[in-house]
Amino acid sequence: MKTKNDLFFNGVGFGLICLFGMFFLIASCDKDDNKEPNGNGDKSVRQYDAAAGIGDIVTIIVDDNNNTISFNNKTTGESGVVNFIRITTGLMKGALKVDINNEEYYLLEIPGQMIVTYLPFNSTDEFVVGVVKSNYTIGDHVGTWLFFNYEPDPNDNNYWGKAGMTANGRFDLELWDFSGQTFHTETGSFFMNQDDPSIIYSVPDGSNDTIQETIYILPDKLRVYDSGPQVGIGVGFAEPDQALSIPEVAGTYVAIWNGGYGSFTIEPNGKLIATFYQDGTLYPDIEYNDFRRTNSADAIHFNNTFFFTDHINPNPIQDVYLFMLPGEALFAVYHDPDKGMLSTMALRIDK
Image (tube, rainbow, N blue to C red):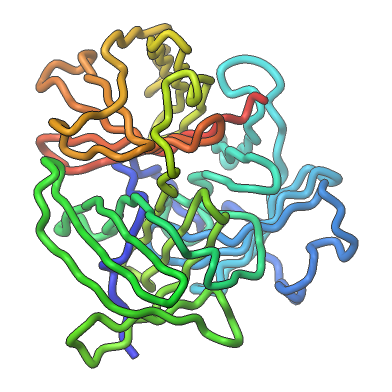
């Protein structure tokens, strides 16, 4: 059995600078991961299955009763717990803030659905995304998924693509560079591990290789892909059956990245307003008047893809593409001339 990182991710071009080491109180973890975290289904305690950008698999528990975030890194064996404060006002309203050695970290959560964070759950400070723990069926995989793949090795290139999954266990995969040019296509079959339905095996047509991945799913919305240690992760957004309109995706979405955080506010009239806090400086109320649905002339065009031009950094002006989960999440992809394809993910946490 070998692993492969060809199937899906969310990369982040911003990488937090902080080692895990002594930051968390290390603790043993002897709970049964197949049970509710507190044994009675109390929604104040929520368990998430997550993947970290380096390729680690992490279980994360958010406990509102004790204001704690605990974790178990199943790849490295590290585990621990830390206290949080819930932000109730301002730009980060709804986020969970953690102070570690005078450094601020945030966890964004749509309770009972998904989380995004840069908390150092391993020896590095990679982007982490997770979905609420669940038992999956093959039907949860069915659909078209737009994804971004993050490579932890800086010598490798991030990429995006599309995966179509069918109920009879077939897949078709297409990978693109930022211009939308296809550089790889693949078809094949896939099946689930009977003992652990989060483990998926795929067999490309014409190949004798069986590829193993861990895939966590929020059905019809989000898939988190882990291809194995040191080989990256991915995040896929489900494509809806009908094209989304701007009013359907309107709202304020909060994002976090290296050295800062910010928000994207999409107004029903099509205006996009961004506010960023980066490296100690606030950049408020930046207006983008060219926010729109993608069209067939763009690099990608699907039912949930949108576009705007980042004119704040004119060297060069950057095209930004968005995958959207209306009213819940967005995933922004852009191209940096020095670093290649980058991305960030934002959640609507102010509802």
